[in-house]
Image 1 (cartoon, rainbow, N blue to C red):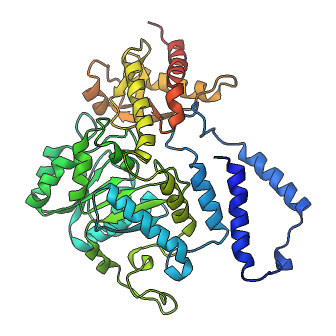
Image 2 (tube, one colour):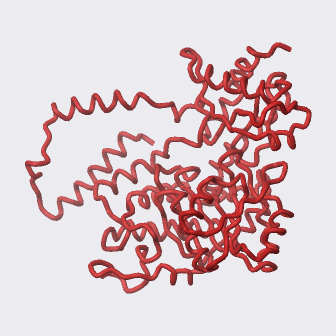
Image 3 (cartoon, rainbow, N blue to C red):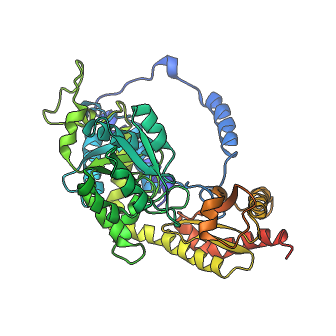
Length: 453
């Protein structure tokens, strides 16, 4: 795609539509001359240089990547109109687009009757899911693994619900024995399962927990904000299919199109298997909701104003790369291959060790050292030297791991500290596939500097 060409076409298309209503002169209060704007724009672009190269394979740190050009064009074109998808009269076209993409997302998870909508983030989407869970199971608590996203505990405090962190197994998945022991107490009404933890990309055994659902009369919510789109690979052998197939038996699921859905921030989504949860949102407004007679997006959302441009961007992207194995699934297959390739390189490395086998596209590893304290020091040094090298930089992130979790995975390591930082790389950009060998070699070079064996 020629981005400059299609951005210009987007502006022309909106201008052409606007001209049908007659010309309108800009109000003098908002008119800025080009020379004044030019000075501000020059400063603006200089400021933007203070950024990491998220687009480049050298950047293998956090879960950040540029949006697809189609999403950029779709967002800009709709943003020029600035529709608000709270109610249909705020943006008829983008409201319809939102309904269509939500239907596609629901189909991706095998939830054909789901009720849902886009949100500004996965955090807000999870808040809505837990809010509904509280309404459906009043007086009962919410359980989640200790490796789940930190916002679940925060949302429980916000909602005034008892939080029950559950220990994890030696791969970072929610421990089934500990969970069932907790469920037997009758104090839990909802279990949160994670399909792609933000630390290691670990997928909880959703299929196994589904078997506990009816036995203990609990709701199941799946936080698939990070990993949800990997369900498209469930039939390819690239991921274990059972957890993804089990999502259709859960009560709600969250996914973030602004991660693997190739969208700009913020674009999350929440889906409820039972559309009857709409009753928990029941409200009215004296000055809006006058166009449709059926349920609209503002009546099933905790948020009010929401950018219609987000729906437009996702709709246009899905027209080109639909959320199917043959569409967006082909894009997701690349980072999964990259992560597996890097794991094999780490298994053969004399200077680096794989912390744990990746479930998705987050790779965790550390410089080979005999003690936790030395691992921590070496990881910090590799991170710092890599990110500040003026000639050959590499951008990574770290993950703090407690001594017990480290010991379960690597019992031979001397645990002389309470925790250690390990290196963490998110290889979500398809461009990383061609660069992973060079990236690995560069990090090996940095790790070898402090290796005095």
